[in-house]
Image 1: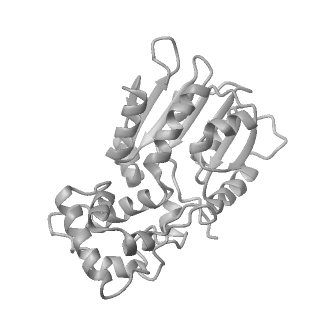
Image 2: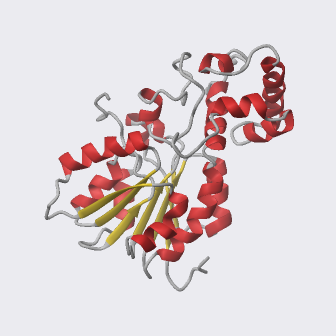
Image 3: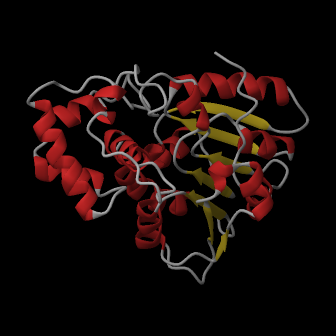
Length: 294
């Protein structure tokens, strides 16, 4: 595995400030990734329980944390948990966690695009159309969905990232294309995605691949399960931080938790230094008597 120091956690300073880390208080990083946010929580003395569904990412984070925050340490305690954040309630019960703060940094790491060969990006046409974050748990690959779903089901899938007309058009092309050849690799899907128009800033494949990944991993369904449980297990006065990158994620957050107490967006300087942060929105929810608990 390559050196992953190039990955930059989004809204790092703002996230740590929002969580108000207290020494020896318990925190959950529900989306560990490569561990960027977790390192800072531990360094400030937090007792951290970090959840990650992708075994490869879990090992990357384990190495990073063992170097940055060796145990035993005066800084803080941490435990890494290989699981899906939809199970956050049972995880909290198992490990007797009473968190003062919980973080969800949604989407996937840039490492998935650059180093993990499961077809998350269209930059390497030879990769298999897999897109599973946890191949040991999830049985259905991206190629399976493309090869078996009906045209109307495919349209609904691509609505996660595309307009209705775009989703309908792509679904039709997929059904027609698989009559000739089954989908197996990134190249197979790229061949039927219409080329980018000159005026478009975003490649059409970007939205298609994102929607397909979200469907393969049931990302929005899992989020809908996890958020009310996360808010429920927070201690009074605790803070829930959710970083979204997509309107579908925002919709789930708003439907489940209502309007946030505060929203923070990346500064122009962060967007310049880390373009991946440009669509990020950090929503902060405080558990107190003024908010109806789910």
